[in-house]
Picture (tube, helix red, strand yellow):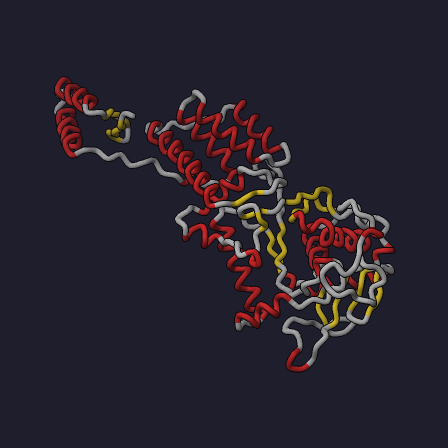
Length: 418
């Protein structure tokens, strides 16, 4: 949408390929088991190989869904030095303290802590799901750098040397380090899921603004969860689906994209296979309209985008990315009067935002009966002989059979009457 409106965009996405403890995202003791290392052992892979495997799978599925690849893709493991430097800056400015298991951010030193979530620091409590760390001065304090707890054969696969000893970065620090490196501070827009508001994004703001002394980002866009059959999707629920599962049920991945466009990003999406059926049907209908416009516009005339249609589309996407309203504009256009050339041009223009690959749809090939083909060949011979009357009689005969002959500069074309 931003590029469609003419903005210069630099989109940065970080890949969290460093293993973190299962408690890191809870803001409590951070004493859980390392998720990356645990999963790697179960699959008989190294943590590094597992990170690469899932990164490649993520971008493969993103491509299937026609999601634009970010301009910068940065991996946490490639930016350990930047993360250490950021922790050092926070240390120099008096925002850290040392505990038995790592270097922590002291939230009492940051007066704006919790503003994003609308939750005061005093409301944070410890021990929600993991063991409480007695070394933490306050439940909201969070790890910036963690010490490796094991040595020898049981040592972590991912660990690095630092001024505080061998260890690995806390979960939150990578985002601040890389966003500042590639975008400066403040940058315009930070995206993420609603589950990150209370802990992860709150901690990002604290460490970034404490280190730089200025605002981190101007706007936050948080996407809601997708439920499956009314329940939150997850492995523990037994309802975790991937793009491969969509394809295995003979759905086009872009039908899932269409399904997502029908729900505002800040509204929960309920995924069901029945909803996928409806989305596939709607997408197929849209494609059929595109084919019909291309069939009807065989003379190659370029269409134009009516200003009122574009204004309606802009009104929708400018309203907090109201994709459902934008789809409504699409179907209003299809139902309206207008030339097929203009409708085609307008839909392809809108698709720069919608991303349904409408421009790639080809006109439907016309199946011409053999007897019609023979008449067309005969007519061409009569035209060469300048026998115009007989040629016109054949044209009329072909029309009676349900086909229209068009003589163009590029040759004779056939159009089937609807």
